[in-house]
Image 1: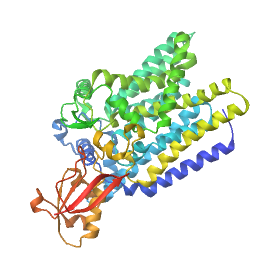
Image 2: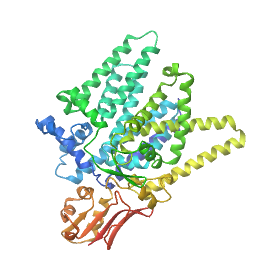
Image 3: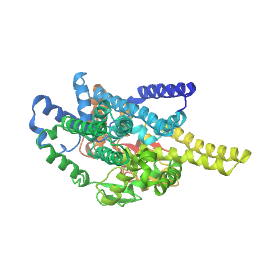
Length: 518
């Protein structure tokens, strides 16, 4: 392991700057269409726990893991924010970011541990931060980003546990796993990996250590205990309710919506197998995807030659491979209901980056073997320049179009943003409604402003406004009653029928929301 104080200082500066950046900009984001419902999940679970409210038993979303929402709800109550929606949602955004911040730091440690390099660890954390869609969602997406964050934490504790199978590490890993599962039940992948690698540990380790078996048994006990403890739905008939929640993950029938994919409106239950891979490729900086493809070759090739020794030689690489490919293959094969791009698979993205880091390292190793002298330096400089240009353009997009980093597409998605808008969903979260509402309130002095919106998210975003401004807005049921119409082109690039455009927000020339004065 490198012990360079310069790297440690650089890492410290990066994370101080990242934390300060989050503290400055967390107030800038709108409210996603799901946030109010997510808040309700936490609220009804807390009422069940502390007030004995039985309505949880008949709650349609009781199969959603509530643990992070319960934490947010508990903070809301303890900080006395319940009667202040703006403060409540800002608090939620700040805490969601803080969880992501912790996960990025542990991803740095995970990358550093795997590649035995402070520099690679630093690069891995930078790659995760400079992923525009992940970055934006880290403030308002308390489902997918919370799950991604806890998945990183759980994988880190898994590796630490297998390095030293002690009671303390068993407890910590079980706790992290339980929280992950109780955010999204797909987190069961981590205990599955633990079981696979424990069996391998038994088969590969001679003589067999009784302490290892005891530690793993303790881990499984703590895991079951915490999973049930943090999920009130499981307090009654835990096996039955857990099984129902697991089946619901594959047979989610409550959502009946459509998505815009490759220019077609497709039912969420009938998406093609390539839906997730395409979304990952077109919304990730291109250099990451190139490094990932190279990394796949170097990750997979060793297992064909020495598969019997993978546990001692390459077990952590295999964990990373399974982390990425198992969920992806499950989605491609079983085709569960999906919605809104690839956000339900965000949790595999850190593994994508780890494979990419391996690809980058091995690319330079291969170049060193094939080229020498000035040729070697020229090739290396060329690769660094190409990747650097790609990342600089990514940063430019993130800065220029703040707070809409969630609308990032690379050039593989289409020739321009207007073309991309016709092929893929844009502002599916409805975050741009905040900007539209703020503009109307700033430029219309009326005490009562009647608004007709194209989407439920247009109403939800009023809660990020101050109470004084929120009271000025009156939502009506049709354009004939309204002063303004607001629409965000969620599933269509066609212009609205109204003529007098009052305001619009554009991303590289493509409108993401329009306000019409009626």
